Length: 96
Image (cartoon, rainbow, N blue to C red; front, side):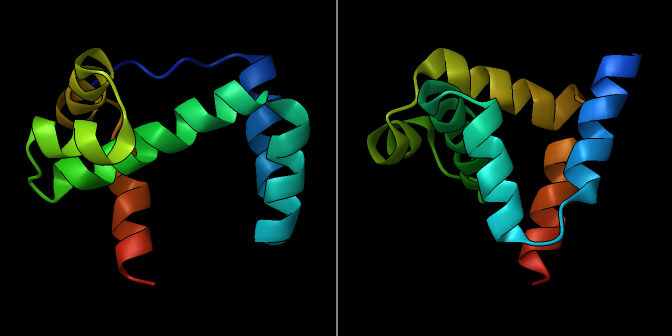
């Protein structure tokens, strides 16, 4: 498992996200704190992770998301050897 970065600034960001009450507040916060390119990259990675967890092949993921093979490989590596954040989120989204 990947080592989780811990510092006071990351903790502040985590606490800020946890303080938000609903998806509208999260959306507003993310739009303020991230550039459009950063938001696109983050959302693309989440979609790639979802598709990989559904056993989609790289070509289909590239076609549907526009992600590069490097991005897909990086997300796949996180799914296999990361901090299990993707797995946790995807599991919770699946159970909604």
